[in-house]
Every structure is written in C-alpha cells, then in structure tokens.
Length: 408
Image 1 (cartoon, rainbow, N blue to C red):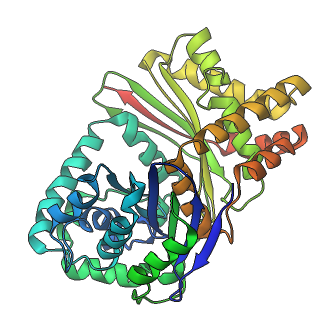
Image 2: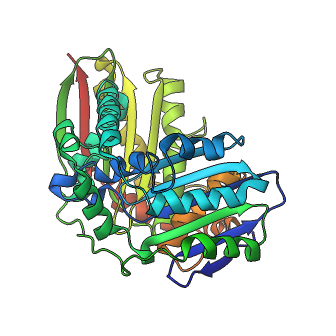
C-alpha cells in the first residue's frame, strides 16, 4: 500500500492513500481520551465527541448532520481511553464539503448551553443502557479493577453526577489543555490526489491555532492481581480473567497478538471456542482480547454462562493457558496459526474505512504507517520460543485477576 504523508505549516499531520473508488473515507483523530480527564472531568472527552456536532459559529446542528448525510454519506465519531475521532464515508466528489465541515466542527464548535443540557440527557440514557447490559459493563469494570487508582480505570461515559455538572467553561478548559497540534492526525483513503487534498486542508485547517506539544500522561504502576465477585440481577453470569500486557510499542505485542488469536480470536477454531462451546457446551460467547495503550496493555478472556458452570469454566480456561505456557506449538500448527492471523489482518484492511481509522491511530504514535505487508512479515518471522516466553509472562496464573458477575 502506498501511503503519502504531509504536515501542514501549523503541525497537523496527514496520511493519505489514493484509491480509485466511488466511496472515500476521511477522519480526524485527536490523541485525547478518557485517561486525560481529571477527577471532576470523567466523561468529558466522550461528552465533547457528542457536542461538536451541535453547532458552530457558521452552522446549526441540522446543517452539520445533513451536510454529508444528505449527499449519501455517513458521519460518525467515537471516544476511547486515549483517542477521540470523527470520521465520514462519502461519495468521492464530496471531498471538499467533508474537509470544510470537519475543520468547522473540530475547531469552531460553540457548545450551546441548551444543546449541552439536551445532550446530557442523551448520555445519561446511554449510561443507563450500558448498566442494563452486564455483558458490556463487565469489560469496563474489569479494566477499572486492573488499573485501579489510575485514569485508565475510569469509565469513558462518566457518571450521572459528573456529566450533569459539566459547564461550557469546563469544556473549553479541557479542550485547551488537551487538544494540541502535535496530537492531531488527519487520515484519508479515497479518490483524490495528495496535491488536491493538501490544497483543501491548507484552505480550511492551516488557520487552526492551538498549542503544540503532547500532554504528559501518568504511567500505570503497581498492578496487584485480585479476585472480585459481584451480584447482578440477570439470567446469565459473566466471567473475566486477565492480566496486564504490552504497550503498542513493545515488540512482544506481536507474539501476544498471535497467542490471543489462537486462544480466543474471532475464528470458530479458537481453542476456547472449541473447548468450552463445542466440546462442553457451556458458553454461547467466549473470547479473548488484547488491548494496547501508549504505555501498557491488557489481556483478558470473557465468557457468559450459567452460574453452575462458572467454576468449570475457570478450570478449562486455566488449562488452556497452562498448555500454552508449557508446550511449544508444533510446526504445522504454528504455520497454520500465523496464516490465520495474517489472513484476518488482510481481511480487516480490505475495508477502506477500517484502513483509514487504523492509519489515523498508527500515525498518532509512529513516524509512519506500518503496511499490511510489513505486519504480515513480522508475524511470519515469529518463533515458537517467542510465543512460549510471552505466554509465561502474561498467562502466569499467579498474575491473573478475575471478575465474576454472579446471578442473584
């Protein structure tokens, strides 16, 4: 893949891939998320993601929402622990309108008080919906358990009390502190030349005047494994088991990515799926995950099952972890595992939208994008010894934490 780079005179970075397709994808990502919030700001990054579409100095909310979608496109946004992103997919002739709109909503939003109060109610509904879904809540609660006492532990949505307290001055104060030119990436995959795209960006983005430099983040330290059981009023019980893992820059993340895929990845032949679901029939959903952050990471296994199956599930999970700690993969098995992961990565990048979003995140933290081809080369270069080493670090039973939502 041929990625091209450009840095505007004010420091905003661009990564672009020109493709001859009728639909193009454009995104703006800021390296600011929920971990950058102070105790009285929990939920602020997500609140701003909602509010930037509610009016600017030039446009009302219905103008913003209609500018792309009335032309057959889709406008969206999301917030993570470390990033906030707005993005759109649209018919390629509408690049100019998209760039113009993004510059306006990202840097000229006025946060009308009336709209703020309405959006608080929307977010409170979102919080309540989330609390009604223990299969979602357990993921956030487990992160809070792992990263206890650290900003990574906070919930992205925030709480009713804190969200209701947000004022317009709070919003601008947060943005002034965290929205910095060195922390902004524009990503594009679409039917436009780099020259034309840069011209559009210069027209609409070069007037943006923010502070430079990246915010300082407090590193997480002193992880202590723990075991927590909570009672929930639901039909299904939920279980999570996991440990601290590697940051996005740690080379050991690649063997852990492969181990995660072998253990509980999306394929139906993952070890956890074959054992707990196919062989024993005790879980409809069982999966593992590996999340990387700028300075740390999290590995975890999740399943939902009947309360009577929790203890058996724990034993089966720990057995699979022990097998990966103690036994090297055979040559044929290792080769198949690498091919499967390489294929999944290639399939993911077959979506131009996924490619655009992945490029934005990658360029926030690295000087250039790692192509699918180079990523697959890294996977192909792994050794069975590297998997064994990582398995013994991350799957160590003495370092695992557990969270259980039991049915009442």
